[in-house]
Image 1: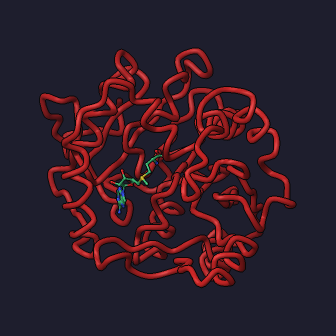
Image 2: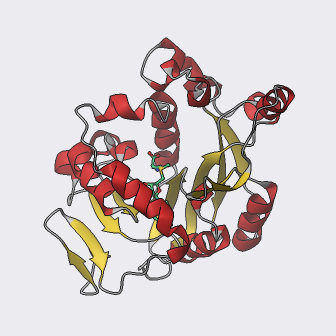
Length: 277
Ligand SMILES: C[S@@+](CC[C@H](N)C(=O)[O-])C[C@H]1O[C@@H](n2cnc3c(N)ncnc32)[C@H](O)[C@@H]1O
């Protein structure tokens, strides 16, 4: 893979790292927590994932994104963790390559288990930070990030990097937790807390997708993008994770995604924009 030149090293777990690795100290406590969690082992990765993400919903979102990627294109997945979004890429788009970046190395070791033979053929793993990507300007046809930028206190730096590494006409998408107006109202009426922005237990930062963030993306990309809502039925916070696995409710949820009607209850909000030529 030509993007990994002599400025990178690759370890025995297939993970690349820039020789001058830069990790932003602002997320130090989050990294420590995630490294601890990542020490666990899993017999069934997809079963575990289905408690935290809706697999059928995200499979459709991936398919939609891949349609926008040109022949022989390269995608960067920022905060890609176990890399599960790309497990079917061999059948879907054998011409496309994906670089998965995560600042928790142990998560990338799990990605090797999830992605098997795709590693080092179509999928490449990089230990790195979203706010300092070790690639030249105009390197990627697609920038994909799911529930990662919401944890970065210096969100603007990650957007500046996304814009820099995308080629002209490159596609950007970010999925973050949605600020659900109806759920927020219900929680507040019941006297319960609804986290919108700030540190959770002084350990990690979480900012639900805000207007301020979208305004910043549009300013950097010098244009207007589209909002989309997904995971409308899937509600892990209410312990309703049945739509997270393939099945009738998962299929319905994937069909509901995108509808603006879901904006007040959807768990995820995404923002899609193309870099101008
Ligand atoms: C909530 S998980 C989402 C994982 C994955 N995108 C998915 O959809 O399953 C967030 C991931 O982003 C990574 N992450 C958070 N901040 C990061 C940063 N600044 N640079 C690189 N990775 C980061 C974490 O280590 C974690 O693997």
